[in-house]
Length: 114
Length: 114
Image 1: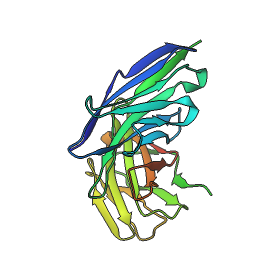
Image 2: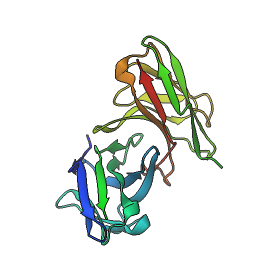
Image 3: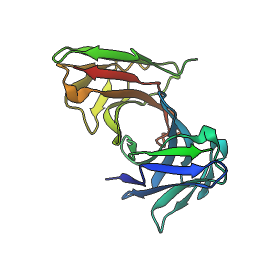
Image 4: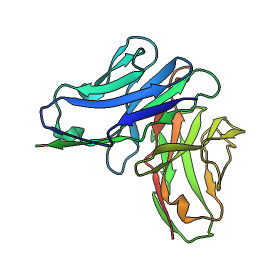
């Protein structure tokens, strides 16, 4: 079985400050890991993905995430928050084998304060 | 090239009514998924399909049915609607090479059951 835990359902940062959204996963086999972003009244968009290549993954809009197997973590970071980053962010995991269903975390809403 | 199109975008149903949420893709991908999103709960997989004629249950299939007669279409049917089915429904396609779990989402269908 696979699962994802996102720590903090709401995170607030000041504009220009570091963004850190936490994600820990559980998987019995090597995982694929994803971050998705959802803007109000829209579907989810892929932000970045880890698929067993480089452990530091760069995504769109200046976001990046680091896969740490020893900590079973895949935290999302951005050095400097922008007002347009305000959205809900979802961490997700899938794994090899079968029909590769994707399991999502419960989401973290990011508020950016001017 | 619209990607994934969901209709309707909004619908209000009375308890016991039935309806079909439509999902059509023009990207020619085999894997298709239906998720529901409830506040604070993330996304839960309802049904998925790995190709025309092949469907299977996800985490929360009760009260729903699907069919997949073509690659393009993956409708979700709600029979005997209940207030617990009030949610936002997302259709998605699997787009990753070799299928790694990378998903492309439609814009969602917001359903209220009264």
